[in-house]
Length: 379
Length: 231
Image 1: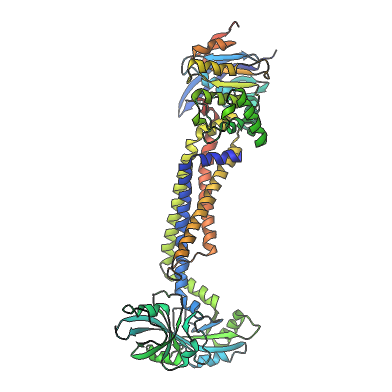
Image 2 (image 1 turned 60 degrees about the vertical axis):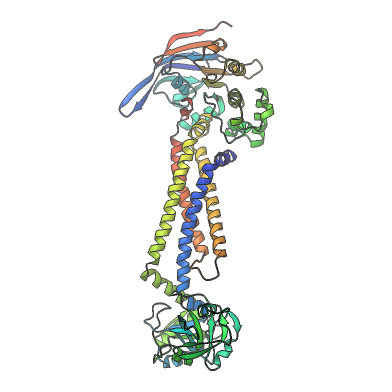
């Protein structure tokens, strides 16, 4: 009776479309909310994506990537002295202001200071120029966003060879790079560690992080543990630092509440629209279901037919919803929107849709079980 | 010969909250196999309840009811479901054809409920539709047919699995005289058919001459003893 069940479902096209729309809209709402959550998280640890290093060493008080507690200059040597460490380099992340010459436009930027010898943590997605040219006097590498923001009055954005100012110091662009945008919207300027002192706030202790790598054959996680034990500093692999930063965001920001609200509303929309429409669908078909009962279809068979209908509605609505969302995300400019559609999101939404379908089936089956076959003799 | 249906002192009441409304008040009746048995009477006299009870869609409160050698009051719900699937065909006043299925698929339903394969059920359904004169419309949806044609589809659905009992609720009330006659000609047991007992609940005096027996109900009882109609 599978075919009969499906034809009854497809036969009422308006109701079928409404059922699909309910589940689809609910899937989109839930997935969009969660994708936004992961997107915001990704924005919050953009520095970790833009600066690739196997191990990050920070002050023990640091709770997340945006928390820049200064380290002592000697801490770099202490990390280097750990036997399992292949190399370690000082690293600076801070805030500064970039000012365009001519127009005088000033924009906030995230200033990154790299070790001039090793260039550890240099951005990997080069658009123009050369990162090694950062060793030249007054050299900086900027991301495309900085180039665009400082060039509203120009025909073309700033490029290699152009000059701007930071903290009253001349900065000559030697490379354009592509980065992931950070949480506050400030985009990235890369320079050498020593020069970052001039371009930044000029603080006494410039080392905010130490980047390190394990010796060949050792895992980053185990070497990070060795560093922590030997130096008393906190050392994390990239994934561990992301996870710590995520945990901090979840515990200390209103984002999980807001996202939870969106996901909850999406779930409720699904339950109400799909549940109500499915109930109406069963109600409107009760005469035919009664006829089937009279002709010898038991409650078990009708329940299986109802479950199948609900499952088809659930999977179709979910599939269309996630498809629409994927296409929408694909159409967005790369890295601009805080939306990340991870497999965990898809799995969670599938589980939520499964619950919605279970609810709709439950009320449908309950209604079907209460239909008396003798209903067919009543006009 | 044993009767196809034997009812003794059958009682049935409906309860709405604390209000109890007795509908069948001790009905006793025998119907012989192969009869075309009519139940008539005014609205609210209990005809529909009686026919619902004797085809196993409704349980009586007390009394004895034996249909085709099955004691319906002693059967479980699933046994009753199985009994209806195997032994009873239904013709409803409002046809109750599923609108999203073709008429062939509608007629095939009783066979599908007996676990016949879809292709064999469809073939038997097409054969039955040929016999009721709808062979040219096998893929039509019910909504595209006239009332008389829809009732013929309903009759084909009631007969396709060759049930020993066919229950018809006002089968001609929505049809004109000519179509009503055609419908009754189809329902009338034919010598070539497998033996079947047909029970017709009707208000329609135009078709009374088809009956082999007529029982008149009033106020929850068979008011007038069933009378055999001379053929």
